[in-house]
Length: 428
Ligand code: SDX
Image (tube, rainbow, N blue to C red; front, side, top):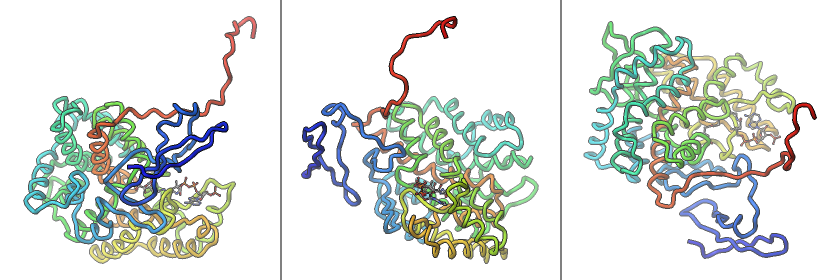
């Protein structure tokens, strides 16, 4: 609805654009008719002032550090919900009744196996391949196995491919880890929870029973909840753009995995722990703080800063609390946690970080927990991708089922040569 207008004066002419209001958050100026009525484009590299779509899934208030999934605060979901329940909520819009949740979990658990041919695909990778390279390849290859569910105009096809993607990501990620350490891949055990199944496929071996530690299962499930969805971030926007051409959902999620891998995005959890280990002891922190502030030094504090949050990332709050719970459950400690706490304290009292509103984000503490559980740093972003598949799939479904959906095709400000004639080689 638009009962407000915005006026733009272009070449001396006033042009009016409707201002659309959401249920909360900033209004948007609907400029869809801008080019047609002015012959001009907007210019917004990085989309810092651009809303790419309407969505009812996730709301972020970056100033206040608020994150809601279908209206429910992330802190409450992390405390009281489960990853499967959050997946149901994001896909369906409401919290499930117990029977609905049981049915959803049963459905997901009965899609956890991979086609045996897919398992052979791993053999084509080097043993030291980064798990994200394997995830990109294997998830993209799912397109070659499920021709029975790639008609995106069919709601039933969309539903089964969504369930297959959510169900198979733990199996794919665990298999990537097993392949990298030369251990046999385990088949899913559907008597376990979604997260328990993943932990067993990752850390279990055929030679003995694997016992899921409840506190670790809960911490891992909470980490999955914290990574489930996050509005129109780079990888979600990639999934939406790929999906807007009508590409099948498996190919779209593979595109999202590729984008998430970047160190400025999902790769930051791996980079953050590597950074903390490089810093080592708290006495080295001032040197790295100065490097982060030095315009001529490409070094940045990984796990700090965010395009949207100009306050503490609410996910980082939960993550920091979870570190202690996992340390206590596993009776481990890691001095890198003290270094992280001290780094946060110093940074949050430093004018540079205060003025630029740089706070810890979801990636700052997550690696400490994942490392304590036993994951190598190379697996951290694969775990992010596993969890974010729920958000990507929910966002993809929301886009595809929108009757007004069109292919995304941005324009540009052209700064290259204007037309000129070809010069034959002997005339150059
Ligand atoms: C995720 O979008 C999402 O929602 C992403 C995510 C999700 O759930 O999907 O939340 C997950 O990707 C979290 C972010 C993980 N990335 C990192 O932790 C990498 C380190 N952070 C930065 O690279 C940066 O903060 C970004 C990429 C996250 C955000 O960059 P922006 O919004 O483009 O901001 P910017 O680069 O323009 O920075 C603004 C200023 C700059 O200084 P000036 O040019 O204004 O002088 O702040 C500085 C930057 O140099 N700055 C940092 C910094 N982050 C920004 N300086 C030092 N260390 C940092 N970490």
